[in-house]
Image (cartoon, rainbow, N blue to C red; front, side, top):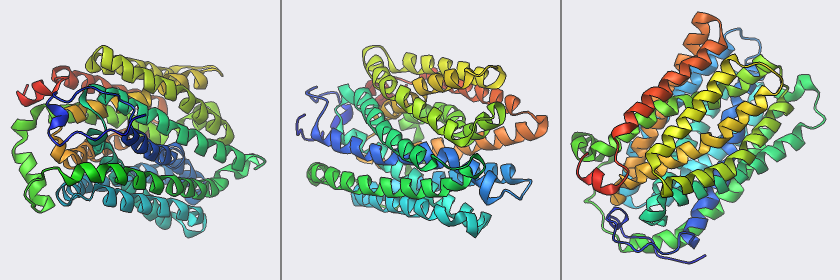
Length: 436
Protein backbone atom coordinates (compact mmCIF):
# COMPACT_ATOMS: atom_id res chain seq x y z
CA UNK A 1 0.00 0.00 0.00
CA UNK A 2 1.05 3.57 -0.59
CA UNK A 3 0.26 6.76 1.26
CA UNK A 4 -0.68 8.82 -1.79
CA UNK A 5 -2.21 12.28 -1.74
CA UNK A 6 -5.78 12.63 -2.92
CA UNK A 7 -6.39 14.47 -6.18
CA UNK A 8 -7.41 18.07 -5.87
CA UNK A 9 -11.05 18.95 -6.49
CA UNK A 10 -11.71 19.14 -10.18
CA UNK A 11 -8.69 17.03 -11.05
CA UNK A 12 -10.63 13.90 -10.35
CA UNK A 13 -12.49 14.28 -13.61
CA UNK A 14 -9.98 16.05 -15.77
CA UNK A 15 -8.13 12.87 -16.63
CA UNK A 16 -4.71 14.47 -16.09
CA UNK A 17 -3.81 12.65 -12.86
CA UNK A 18 -1.29 9.85 -13.31
CA UNK A 19 -2.73 6.40 -12.72
CA UNK A 20 -0.34 5.32 -9.95
CA UNK A 21 -1.18 2.56 -7.48
CA UNK A 22 -4.87 2.12 -6.69
CA UNK A 23 -4.57 0.50 -3.24
CA UNK A 24 -3.48 3.42 -1.05
CA UNK A 25 -3.75 4.08 2.66
CA UNK A 26 -6.62 6.56 2.14
CA UNK A 27 -8.47 3.84 0.21
CA UNK A 28 -7.96 1.32 3.03
CA UNK A 29 -9.11 3.82 5.68
CA UNK A 30 -12.19 4.60 3.54
CA UNK A 31 -13.00 0.91 3.06
CA UNK A 32 -12.71 0.21 6.80
CA UNK A 33 -15.80 2.35 7.40
CA UNK A 34 -17.70 0.08 5.00
CA UNK A 35 -16.79 -2.87 7.24
CA UNK A 36 -18.65 -1.18 10.10
CA UNK A 37 -21.63 0.11 8.16
CA UNK A 38 -22.32 -3.23 6.44
CA UNK A 39 -23.64 -4.64 9.73
CA UNK A 40 -26.71 -2.41 9.41
CA UNK A 41 -28.10 -3.66 6.06
CA UNK A 42 -27.07 -7.24 6.88
CA UNK A 43 -29.13 -7.36 10.08
CA UNK A 44 -31.26 -4.32 10.82
CA UNK A 45 -32.60 -3.30 7.40
CA UNK A 46 -33.13 -6.95 6.41
CA UNK A 47 -34.64 -8.33 9.62
CA UNK A 48 -36.30 -5.44 11.44
CA UNK A 49 -39.41 -5.89 9.28
CA UNK A 50 -39.71 -9.51 10.43
CA UNK A 51 -39.13 -8.38 14.03
CA UNK A 52 -41.77 -5.65 13.69
CA UNK A 53 -44.40 -7.99 12.22
CA UNK A 54 -43.72 -11.02 14.43
CA UNK A 55 -42.86 -9.37 17.76
CA UNK A 56 -43.53 -5.65 18.10
CA UNK A 57 -46.92 -5.61 16.35
CA UNK A 58 -47.71 -9.32 16.48
CA UNK A 59 -51.24 -8.67 17.75
CA UNK A 60 -52.05 -6.23 14.94
CA UNK A 61 -53.52 -7.80 11.77
CA UNK A 62 -52.34 -4.85 9.68
CA UNK A 63 -48.72 -5.15 10.89
CA UNK A 64 -47.33 -5.99 7.42
CA UNK A 65 -49.06 -2.96 5.88
CA UNK A 66 -47.72 -0.76 8.68
CA UNK A 67 -44.23 -2.03 7.96
CA UNK A 68 -44.53 -1.12 4.28
CA UNK A 69 -45.65 2.41 5.18
CA UNK A 70 -42.89 2.77 7.80
CA UNK A 71 -40.23 1.65 5.33
CA UNK A 72 -41.49 4.17 2.78
CA UNK A 73 -41.58 6.95 5.40
CA UNK A 74 -37.93 6.48 6.34
CA UNK A 75 -36.92 6.63 2.68
CA UNK A 76 -38.84 9.87 2.14
CA UNK A 77 -37.42 11.59 5.22
CA UNK A 78 -33.85 10.51 4.48
CA UNK A 79 -34.14 11.44 0.82
CA UNK A 80 -35.42 14.92 1.60
CA UNK A 81 -32.63 15.62 4.08
CA UNK A 82 -29.68 14.12 2.19
CA UNK A 83 -28.94 16.82 -0.45
CA UNK A 84 -29.17 19.66 2.09
CA UNK A 85 -26.92 17.86 4.56
CA UNK A 86 -24.53 17.11 1.68
CA UNK A 87 -24.46 20.76 0.59
CA UNK A 88 -23.75 21.82 4.18
CA UNK A 89 -20.90 19.29 4.36
CA UNK A 90 -19.40 20.59 1.11
CA UNK A 91 -19.55 24.27 2.05
CA UNK A 92 -18.28 23.96 5.61
CA UNK A 93 -15.77 21.20 4.78
CA UNK A 94 -17.30 19.09 7.53
CA UNK A 95 -17.91 15.85 5.71
CA UNK A 96 -16.19 13.72 8.33
CA UNK A 97 -17.85 15.53 11.25
CA UNK A 98 -21.31 15.03 9.75
CA UNK A 99 -20.41 11.43 8.89
CA UNK A 100 -19.51 10.82 12.55
CA UNK A 101 -22.70 12.45 13.85
CA UNK A 102 -24.97 10.48 11.50
CA UNK A 103 -23.14 7.26 12.35
CA UNK A 104 -23.55 7.79 16.11
CA UNK A 105 -27.28 8.53 15.67
CA UNK A 106 -27.74 5.33 13.66
CA UNK A 107 -25.81 3.21 16.16
CA UNK A 108 -27.59 4.66 19.21
CA UNK A 109 -31.03 4.00 17.72
CA UNK A 110 -29.98 0.49 16.66
CA UNK A 111 -28.79 -0.36 20.18
CA UNK A 112 -32.04 0.96 21.65
CA UNK A 113 -34.05 -1.37 19.38
CA UNK A 114 -33.42 -4.11 21.95
CA UNK A 115 -36.12 -2.48 24.10
CA UNK A 116 -38.83 -2.03 21.46
CA UNK A 117 -40.58 -5.33 22.24
CA UNK A 118 -41.83 -3.72 25.46
CA UNK A 119 -42.14 -0.20 24.10
CA UNK A 120 -44.66 -1.00 21.38
CA UNK A 121 -45.01 -0.08 17.69
CA UNK A 122 -44.58 3.68 18.14
CA UNK A 123 -41.22 3.40 19.89
CA UNK A 124 -40.08 0.84 17.32
CA UNK A 125 -41.16 3.11 14.47
CA UNK A 126 -39.35 6.15 15.88
CA UNK A 127 -36.12 4.25 16.50
CA UNK A 128 -36.18 2.69 13.03
CA UNK A 129 -36.72 6.09 11.39
CA UNK A 130 -33.78 7.57 13.33
CA UNK A 131 -31.53 4.59 12.56
CA UNK A 132 -32.43 4.42 8.87
CA UNK A 133 -32.15 8.18 8.33
CA UNK A 134 -28.80 8.26 10.15
CA UNK A 135 -27.55 5.34 8.06
CA UNK A 136 -28.72 6.95 4.81
CA UNK A 137 -27.11 10.32 5.53
CA UNK A 138 -23.88 8.65 6.64
CA UNK A 139 -23.82 6.51 3.50
CA UNK A 140 -24.34 9.54 1.24
CA UNK A 141 -21.39 11.36 2.84
CA UNK A 142 -19.25 8.23 2.83
CA UNK A 143 -19.95 7.57 -0.86
CA UNK A 144 -19.02 11.16 -1.73
CA UNK A 145 -15.53 10.58 -0.27
CA UNK A 146 -14.81 8.15 -3.12
CA UNK A 147 -13.76 11.06 -5.34
CA UNK A 148 -11.27 12.18 -2.67
CA UNK A 149 -9.53 8.83 -2.11
CA UNK A 150 -9.50 7.30 -5.62
CA UNK A 151 -7.92 8.37 -8.91
CA UNK A 152 -10.12 8.43 -12.04
CA UNK A 153 -8.71 5.27 -13.72
CA UNK A 154 -9.46 3.25 -10.58
CA UNK A 155 -12.90 4.50 -9.52
CA UNK A 156 -14.73 1.26 -10.40
CA UNK A 157 -11.99 -0.88 -8.85
CA UNK A 158 -11.82 1.13 -5.62
CA UNK A 159 -15.61 1.29 -5.29
CA UNK A 160 -15.83 -2.48 -5.75
CA UNK A 161 -12.97 -3.00 -3.29
CA UNK A 162 -14.72 -0.92 -0.63
CA UNK A 163 -17.95 -2.80 -1.11
CA UNK A 164 -16.25 -6.20 -1.06
CA UNK A 165 -14.21 -5.43 2.06
CA UNK A 166 -17.30 -3.98 3.70
CA UNK A 167 -19.18 -7.22 3.17
CA UNK A 168 -16.73 -8.85 5.57
CA UNK A 169 -18.29 -6.68 8.26
CA UNK A 170 -21.66 -8.08 7.28
CA UNK A 171 -20.29 -11.62 7.57
CA UNK A 172 -18.90 -10.89 11.05
CA UNK A 173 -22.23 -9.41 12.16
CA UNK A 174 -24.16 -12.40 10.79
CA UNK A 175 -21.84 -14.84 12.57
CA UNK A 176 -22.50 -13.00 15.82
CA UNK A 177 -26.25 -13.20 15.15
CA UNK A 178 -26.10 -16.94 14.44
CA UNK A 179 -24.20 -17.53 17.68
CA UNK A 180 -26.77 -15.51 19.64
CA UNK A 181 -29.60 -17.40 17.96
CA UNK A 182 -28.18 -20.85 18.73
CA UNK A 183 -30.25 -22.72 21.27
CA UNK A 184 -33.18 -20.32 21.07
CA UNK A 185 -36.51 -22.16 20.58
CA UNK A 186 -37.93 -21.68 17.07
CA UNK A 187 -40.96 -19.85 18.43
CA UNK A 188 -38.79 -17.44 20.39
CA UNK A 189 -36.23 -16.69 17.67
CA UNK A 190 -37.83 -13.42 16.45
CA UNK A 191 -37.76 -12.02 20.00
CA UNK A 192 -34.00 -12.71 20.24
CA UNK A 193 -33.51 -10.33 17.29
CA UNK A 194 -33.63 -7.43 19.75
CA UNK A 195 -30.34 -8.61 21.25
CA UNK A 196 -28.91 -9.04 17.75
CA UNK A 197 -29.74 -5.43 16.87
CA UNK A 198 -28.06 -4.18 20.05
CA UNK A 199 -24.87 -6.11 19.33
CA UNK A 200 -24.82 -4.93 15.70
CA UNK A 201 -25.04 -1.30 16.90
CA UNK A 202 -22.09 -1.82 19.22
CA UNK A 203 -20.15 -3.54 16.42
CA UNK A 204 -20.76 -0.61 14.09
CA UNK A 205 -19.71 2.17 16.44
CA UNK A 206 -16.57 0.36 17.64
CA UNK A 207 -15.24 0.06 14.08
CA UNK A 208 -16.75 3.14 12.41
CA UNK A 209 -15.35 5.83 14.70
CA UNK A 210 -11.70 4.66 14.38
CA UNK A 211 -12.21 4.44 10.59
CA UNK A 212 -13.42 8.05 10.51
CA UNK A 213 -10.41 9.10 12.60
CA UNK A 214 -8.10 7.33 10.14
CA UNK A 215 -9.75 9.06 7.18
CA UNK A 216 -9.36 12.43 8.88
CA UNK A 217 -5.56 12.02 9.01
CA UNK A 218 -5.48 11.74 5.19
CA UNK A 219 -8.39 13.84 3.95
CA UNK A 220 -7.76 16.90 6.10
CA UNK A 221 -4.44 17.41 4.33
CA UNK A 222 -6.00 17.37 0.85
CA UNK A 223 -8.90 19.56 1.97
CA UNK A 224 -6.54 22.20 3.36
CA UNK A 225 -5.35 23.19 -0.11
CA UNK A 226 -8.60 22.72 -1.97
CA UNK A 227 -10.72 25.51 -3.33
CA UNK A 228 -14.34 25.78 -2.32
CA UNK A 229 -17.34 27.68 -3.48
CA UNK A 230 -18.46 30.82 -1.79
CA UNK A 231 -20.46 29.87 1.24
CA UNK A 232 -24.19 29.75 0.60
CA UNK A 233 -27.06 28.37 2.62
CA UNK A 234 -27.50 24.66 1.88
CA UNK A 235 -31.03 25.28 0.61
CA UNK A 236 -29.78 27.88 -1.88
CA UNK A 237 -27.02 25.51 -3.03
CA UNK A 238 -29.47 22.70 -3.71
CA UNK A 239 -31.91 25.01 -5.53
CA UNK A 240 -29.00 26.33 -7.61
CA UNK A 241 -28.02 22.82 -8.62
CA UNK A 242 -31.60 22.03 -9.67
CA UNK A 243 -31.82 25.23 -11.71
CA UNK A 244 -28.59 24.38 -13.54
CA UNK A 245 -29.64 20.79 -14.25
CA UNK A 246 -28.83 21.15 -17.96
CA UNK A 247 -25.14 21.43 -17.06
CA UNK A 248 -25.34 18.17 -15.12
CA UNK A 249 -27.69 16.31 -17.44
CA UNK A 250 -25.63 13.12 -17.55
CA UNK A 251 -25.36 12.82 -13.76
CA UNK A 252 -29.07 13.45 -13.28
CA UNK A 253 -30.00 10.95 -15.98
CA UNK A 254 -27.86 8.37 -14.25
CA UNK A 255 -29.74 9.13 -11.03
CA UNK A 256 -33.02 8.60 -12.88
CA UNK A 257 -31.96 5.13 -14.01
CA UNK A 258 -30.54 4.27 -10.62
CA UNK A 259 -33.76 5.53 -9.02
CA UNK A 260 -35.72 2.85 -10.85
CA UNK A 261 -33.21 0.06 -10.24
CA UNK A 262 -32.92 0.93 -6.58
CA UNK A 263 -36.69 0.64 -6.16
CA UNK A 264 -36.17 -3.10 -6.59
CA UNK A 265 -33.02 -3.33 -4.46
CA UNK A 266 -34.50 -1.46 -1.49
CA UNK A 267 -37.79 -3.38 -1.63
CA UNK A 268 -35.94 -6.69 -1.64
CA UNK A 269 -33.92 -5.59 1.38
CA UNK A 270 -37.06 -4.80 3.37
CA UNK A 271 -39.22 -7.77 2.30
CA UNK A 272 -37.07 -10.71 1.25
CA UNK A 273 -36.89 -12.26 4.74
CA UNK A 274 -40.70 -12.09 4.98
CA UNK A 275 -41.12 -13.61 1.49
CA UNK A 276 -38.62 -16.41 2.14
CA UNK A 277 -40.30 -17.35 5.41
CA UNK A 278 -43.77 -17.29 3.86
CA UNK A 279 -42.85 -19.26 0.71
CA UNK A 280 -40.37 -21.78 2.09
CA UNK A 281 -41.18 -21.93 5.80
CA UNK A 282 -37.60 -21.15 6.85
CA UNK A 283 -36.90 -20.39 10.49
CA UNK A 284 -34.84 -17.37 11.49
CA UNK A 285 -31.60 -19.31 11.86
CA UNK A 286 -32.05 -20.68 8.33
CA UNK A 287 -32.56 -17.15 7.03
CA UNK A 288 -29.37 -15.99 8.76
CA UNK A 289 -27.39 -18.80 7.13
CA UNK A 290 -28.76 -17.73 3.74
CA UNK A 291 -27.69 -14.16 4.50
CA UNK A 292 -24.22 -15.45 5.30
CA UNK A 293 -24.12 -17.30 1.96
CA UNK A 294 -25.20 -14.07 0.23
CA UNK A 295 -22.24 -12.19 1.71
CA UNK A 296 -19.74 -14.96 0.91
CA UNK A 297 -20.82 -14.89 -2.75
CA UNK A 298 -20.97 -11.08 -2.88
CA UNK A 299 -17.36 -10.45 -1.79
CA UNK A 300 -15.58 -11.96 -4.83
CA UNK A 301 -18.35 -11.00 -7.26
CA UNK A 302 -18.22 -7.33 -6.24
CA UNK A 303 -14.46 -7.34 -6.69
CA UNK A 304 -14.63 -9.11 -10.06
CA UNK A 305 -17.43 -6.94 -11.48
CA UNK A 306 -15.38 -3.85 -10.57
CA UNK A 307 -12.46 -5.18 -12.59
CA UNK A 308 -14.80 -6.17 -15.44
CA UNK A 309 -16.24 -2.64 -15.62
CA UNK A 310 -12.73 -1.12 -15.75
CA UNK A 311 -11.66 -3.46 -18.55
CA UNK A 312 -14.94 -3.63 -20.47
CA UNK A 313 -17.53 -0.87 -19.99
CA UNK A 314 -19.54 0.06 -16.93
CA UNK A 315 -22.84 0.37 -18.83
CA UNK A 316 -22.63 -3.09 -20.37
CA UNK A 317 -21.64 -4.58 -17.01
CA UNK A 318 -24.62 -2.95 -15.28
CA UNK A 319 -27.01 -4.28 -17.96
CA UNK A 320 -25.62 -7.79 -17.42
CA UNK A 321 -26.23 -7.42 -13.68
CA UNK A 322 -29.81 -6.27 -14.28
CA UNK A 323 -30.46 -9.40 -16.37
CA UNK A 324 -29.17 -11.65 -13.57
CA UNK A 325 -31.32 -9.82 -11.02
CA UNK A 326 -34.41 -10.29 -13.21
CA UNK A 327 -33.71 -14.04 -13.33
CA UNK A 328 -33.49 -14.14 -9.53
CA UNK A 329 -36.85 -12.37 -9.20
CA UNK A 330 -38.55 -14.81 -11.59
CA UNK A 331 -37.23 -17.75 -9.58
CA UNK A 332 -38.30 -16.12 -6.32
CA UNK A 333 -41.81 -15.61 -7.66
CA UNK A 334 -42.56 -18.85 -9.52
CA UNK A 335 -39.80 -21.34 -8.68
CA UNK A 336 -40.35 -24.34 -6.45
CA UNK A 337 -38.09 -26.83 -4.74
CA UNK A 338 -36.09 -26.99 -1.55
CA UNK A 339 -32.90 -25.91 -3.31
CA UNK A 340 -34.42 -22.70 -4.74
CA UNK A 341 -33.60 -20.41 -1.78
CA UNK A 342 -29.90 -21.25 -2.20
CA UNK A 343 -29.98 -20.60 -5.97
CA UNK A 344 -31.84 -17.30 -5.51
CA UNK A 345 -29.45 -16.11 -2.81
CA UNK A 346 -26.43 -16.97 -4.96
CA UNK A 347 -27.85 -14.96 -7.89
CA UNK A 348 -28.62 -12.02 -5.63
CA UNK A 349 -25.16 -12.23 -4.08
CA UNK A 350 -23.59 -12.04 -7.53
CA UNK A 351 -25.11 -8.68 -8.41
CA UNK A 352 -26.83 -6.99 -5.46
CA UNK A 353 -23.80 -5.20 -4.01
CA UNK A 354 -21.73 -5.03 -7.18
CA UNK A 355 -24.55 -3.29 -9.06
CA UNK A 356 -24.72 -0.55 -6.41
CA UNK A 357 -20.93 -0.26 -6.29
CA UNK A 358 -20.68 0.29 -10.05
CA UNK A 359 -23.48 2.85 -10.08
CA UNK A 360 -21.65 4.64 -7.26
CA UNK A 361 -18.38 4.84 -9.19
CA UNK A 362 -20.19 5.74 -12.44
CA UNK A 363 -21.92 8.61 -10.65
CA UNK A 364 -18.63 9.70 -9.06
CA UNK A 365 -17.10 9.98 -12.54
CA UNK A 366 -19.84 12.42 -13.58
CA UNK A 367 -19.78 14.46 -10.36
CA UNK A 368 -17.91 17.78 -9.78
CA UNK A 369 -15.38 16.84 -7.11
CA UNK A 370 -15.76 20.10 -5.18
CA UNK A 371 -19.51 19.43 -4.84
CA UNK A 372 -19.35 15.70 -4.29
CA UNK A 373 -21.27 15.53 -0.99
CA UNK A 374 -24.11 17.64 -2.40
CA UNK A 375 -24.36 15.52 -5.54
CA UNK A 376 -24.21 12.30 -3.55
CA UNK A 377 -26.99 13.79 -1.48
CA UNK A 378 -29.03 13.82 -4.67
CA UNK A 379 -27.89 10.24 -5.14
CA UNK A 380 -29.50 9.51 -1.77
CA UNK A 381 -32.68 11.20 -3.01
CA UNK A 382 -32.76 8.89 -6.04
CA UNK A 383 -31.90 5.88 -3.90
CA UNK A 384 -34.17 6.59 -0.94
CA UNK A 385 -36.82 9.25 -1.52
CA UNK A 386 -37.88 7.83 -4.87
CA UNK A 387 -37.28 4.25 -3.73
CA UNK A 388 -40.22 4.68 -1.36
CA UNK A 389 -42.28 3.78 -4.44
CA UNK A 390 -40.87 0.23 -4.33
CA UNK A 391 -42.19 -0.82 -0.88
CA UNK A 392 -45.49 0.96 -1.57
CA UNK A 393 -45.89 -0.83 -4.91
CA UNK A 394 -44.98 -4.19 -3.38
CA UNK A 395 -47.51 -3.73 -0.56
CA UNK A 396 -50.23 -2.50 -2.94
CA UNK A 397 -49.82 -5.36 -5.43
CA UNK A 398 -49.72 -7.94 -2.62
CA UNK A 399 -52.90 -6.46 -1.08
CA UNK A 400 -54.79 -6.22 -4.38
CA UNK A 401 -53.86 -9.67 -5.70
CA UNK A 402 -53.40 -11.50 -2.41
CA UNK A 403 -50.16 -12.88 -3.83
CA UNK A 404 -46.58 -12.12 -2.83
CA UNK A 405 -45.47 -13.77 -6.08
CA UNK A 406 -47.25 -11.09 -8.11
CA UNK A 407 -45.68 -8.40 -5.92
CA UNK A 408 -42.21 -9.85 -6.57
CA UNK A 409 -42.78 -9.95 -10.34
CA UNK A 410 -43.91 -6.30 -10.32
CA UNK A 411 -40.37 -5.32 -9.32
CA UNK A 412 -39.00 -6.45 -12.70
CA UNK A 413 -40.67 -3.46 -14.36
CA UNK A 414 -38.46 -1.07 -12.34
CA UNK A 415 -35.33 -2.92 -13.49
CA UNK A 416 -36.30 -2.86 -17.16
CA UNK A 417 -37.13 0.86 -17.12
CA UNK A 418 -33.93 1.61 -15.22
CA UNK A 419 -31.83 -0.27 -17.77
CA UNK A 420 -33.44 1.66 -20.61
CA UNK A 421 -32.79 5.00 -18.85
CA UNK A 422 -29.07 4.21 -18.52
CA UNK A 423 -28.55 3.54 -22.23
CA UNK A 424 -27.70 7.17 -23.07
CA UNK A 425 -25.57 7.99 -20.04
CA UNK A 426 -21.88 8.59 -20.91
CA UNK A 427 -19.25 6.40 -19.31
CA UNK A 428 -16.50 9.03 -19.22
CA UNK A 429 -16.17 12.52 -17.82
CA UNK A 430 -15.80 14.17 -21.24
CA UNK A 431 -19.30 13.04 -22.16
CA UNK A 432 -20.58 14.55 -18.95
CA UNK A 433 -18.92 17.92 -19.61
CA UNK A 434 -20.37 18.03 -23.10
CA UNK A 435 -23.84 17.45 -21.69
CA UNK A 436 -24.44 14.25 -23.63
